[in-house]
Structures are given as structure tokens and as C-alpha cells.
Length: 255
Image (cartoon, rainbow, N blue to C red):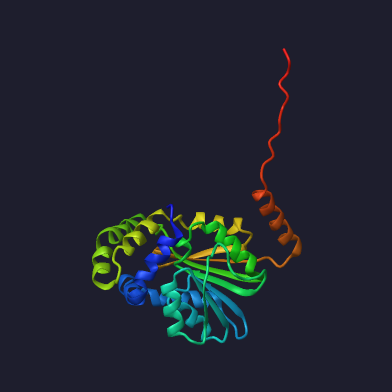
């Protein structure tokens, strides 16, 4: 979908107050399980520096922080960042753009984003930024809504999105209209295979995914290569992809 970043950020400002409560209800309690699975996949170690993109109210950042890692949360919504700072005073939260992360190269041991890549205007640019700020050998974990591979499950899930979720959101959210966007963004989001291709194209290796809750959610993982020759190859490929194409003028033969 064509997304306007300011509009999406403003929408999240409007749902920040009841965001966690609404998520718990809409997910049928599975949000806690998805968060726990993400933390296990990130496997934070004491002293590591971890970047949590689309950190929201800070719930996922706090879960990573409990293991002794130094967590930095980034979100484009002022309302979300303000709420996260009030709730988790020992964690650093920054308002920032995932397409232009305010960090240097090779700063983080791990980067994670949960249910936020879908809301970014250009997800592939954001993936390249995640690659840039990771240290060689660093790990990426993306948890996002996806497409259930079993047809009957997929049909039931989209029926829930279209008919049931709007009713629940109307009763539990401070901005029910935002959840209309949620349903639309999930329907338009690529499936597990296509997202895996995007992650590989950004330069990550050892890319794999695991379905959660019958594929309603998928957790993708990747690693930034350690081998300098591989990193140089990735950098050259990206440079060629962004380099303007030269126009060659061909002389018209005279009759």
C-alpha cells in the first residue's frame, strides 16, 4: 500500500493509550506468546547492544532488557515514545525513522522489529538500514503478521480481520479506525517467501522463517556476514543498484 509516514505515525499516536490492552484482546492472548518467542530468537546476552525498531510502548524492549542487554528502542510515533519513556525509565527510547536510522555503521549485536516492518513506507530500505547498523555476525529477528499456508485457516483468519476485529477494536481501542488500516495492511503484506527474498536482497545470510499460530504470524531470521569479501560483494551490489543508468547516445546513420 501507499503509506504516508506522517499519517501512520499520527494514527499510532492516537492508539498509544490503550495499545497494549487492545493488542492482547485482538490476538486472543497470543501477543504474549509471540513476544516470548521473539525474545528467545534474539537470545539477548548481558552486555550486548540491541536495537528494537517500532518499539511502541516499550513492552518488547523491556522483555529484551530483562536479560541484561542494553536495549535502544526506536519508534516514529511521538505518542508511543512518550508512553514508553514513562513506563520504562531505564531504557533509552528515540523517535526516529527506520529508513534513516540515527546510528553509525556496525553498532548493534542484534536488531529486531515486531509488527512494525509492515508500517514502514519502504520496508526494503529499512532492511538495508538494519543491515548497516548491525555488527558483522549480528543477528536480525523480524516478527510480523503473515499468510497462513493452509487455505481454510487463511479464509477463517481474513474473515476475522474483516468482520470480527472491527467490532472488538470499536470497544477496546481509543482509535478504532486505526484497526481498519491494520486489516488492510495485513491483507496487502507479502507472504513468508517474498519477505525472505527481501531480507536476502538486503545482504543477510542464513535467512529462515518459522510460522507461529498456524502462520498468522511468521518470525524471520537472518545474519550479517562476517566474511569481509562477502560484505564487500553486498556493498558493491547495492552501489550498482543505486547508481544512475547512463544514457548512451547512438549516432543515427546517414542515408
